[in-house]
Length: 143
Image (tube, rainbow, N blue to C red; front, side, top):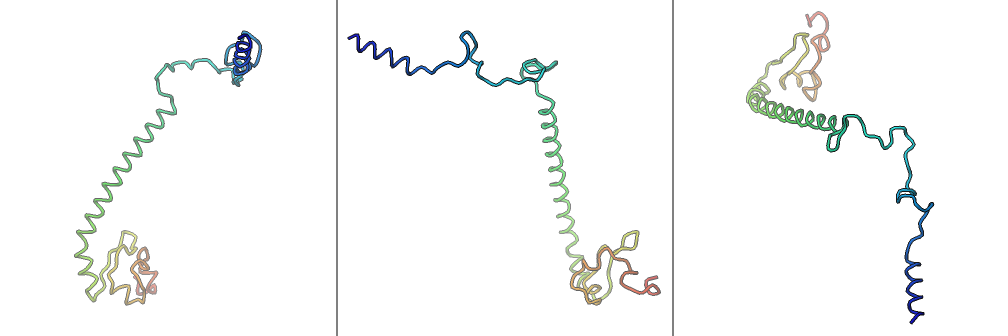
């Protein structure tokens, strides 16, 4: 029976991992440690459960993003509503054989009807938008 007990003792000793370091040291003796002067020290004013500055900034940023997305959604809805409202006018103006256009305060075309851009040999209205009369006519006619 002693042989069995001796074998069991050997098995137990073999199954235990070898400890690194000197005896009497804590379990964290083999772990890497930070060499910064503030390592292991509590930050002033930061208690357990208090959010960090980076965490607060992240929350504020997320809140701002949600707010901007909500504003964008409302603006898109208003734009769609205005486009639907103006659609009958655009259909009517595009089918009139006369020059119909809108200009801004600097005399740039904001919108032109189909007749106006087709008469000039252009394929799409965007080719005229942003231009002035001086860009499409001679100086004498543009004035």
